[in-house]
Image 1 (cartoon, rainbow over the protein chains, first blue to last red):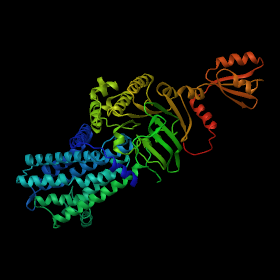
Image 2 (image 1 turned 180 degrees about the vertical axis):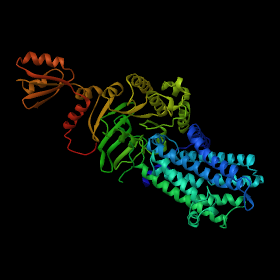
Image 3 (image 1 turned 90 degrees about the horizontal axis):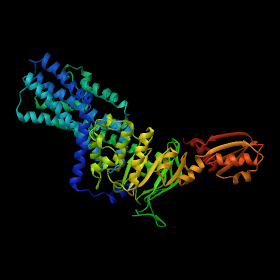
Length: 271
Length: 317
């Protein structure tokens, strides 16, 4: 396809930076509105991490601590990771699989939309939902769980979790390219739920059997949650750099897989 | 992949007519299915061309190639003299495709606002709403619309960029008569503004209502081409079957007869209208018997056209 690449570079449309910014802004705005208005979608993304947190962090273990870290604080890091992961996987994979499989992406591709705007809108929307989930956990923790921390720590934790949504958005793109509109949600759950459990997002790592703790070392949610826990003084012994390296590598692999799917789609027949 | 691509020409012309879309010796396979076989096809500036054919004939494939959504296995695809995948070409085209699901929670005006943003010189949103007959529906969510209204939104998205060339892939499929006529009116109004339109359809009536030129496609091959009147004569007439002593040569002379075929002891005549032919037949041959008149349905007409084209077996469906 080198000839096609030449055509692209030779006759690139000249848009002003303002025009490009407008496209990206509107694409993201409508992607966000589209998802927000699906009540089941919004409700289920928010309710699972929040319900778990209320039950295990506020109702059952409110006065306990893991070492120096209160349970209510500890669980913001882990259920935060859980919520961010869900928002990102569903936000990218389910929408992409449906848009691809049911022809909507084709209508967009036939227009002069910059393809990157489409993906960026999904990733940004996932980050917004991730932020909302993390802030809601904090609000509950501060109000009912006695969670207290310096503002810098709070900002660090929110920032880490939200930036940490990127590997899962990348994973969502990969899943979205290799599943259909009907199989995408179940495929996501099939990966999301066991991965969350094995990464210690539901039950803290120290209560999990040794074999699960071994498996966790290769799972991205484990590394994100350990980064988050590190901020509140409950991290594991691995270095921060190692956690980030694993997440970056995982993101790259997922983007590579998504790219294969993108190429494959160019020559596929729909309906 | 042997998609050959030449240097980009600003325009391509034959005689004085500018060609805005061109498939040249195009072959397209999906796995072992041959969707298009050696297709040559041109759309000239300002004309409305209907690509007419039954389901699976290759109409949608032709449109997808011209939109740069899929590359040909061999042959050339040019739109405005350039590669259809380049964004500059896409700035000048609009497309109404068959879609399984459109985001349902966005409002009509929001869908139009987003698509308009992709283009350099979009139409005014009010103008788009008016052209697609959506003024009263602008605040409705897409999921709340009827089938005809949904098609009109897709039509609005195709025209909102003020394109020079419009692709309409089965624009009225699944619509009732009223909704279909409404969309036809909107398409006609657009044609009145000098747009070039390529539409695909499996309704001959639709091709007749909208197009200047009809290209009939079946099993991936172009089997007939002409004005709607010419195509109707070949596909939409009556079939008269009878046993007669009149000779084939003289039957061909009868008014309105387009085709005569001998079939065992009987003959089969194709004509645009049955009555004038019948009057002559009965007057000239009092012994005529076994008379049957059927309307040549489109599917049947395709069969006839396919046989005429001397087509031999292939497995594109």
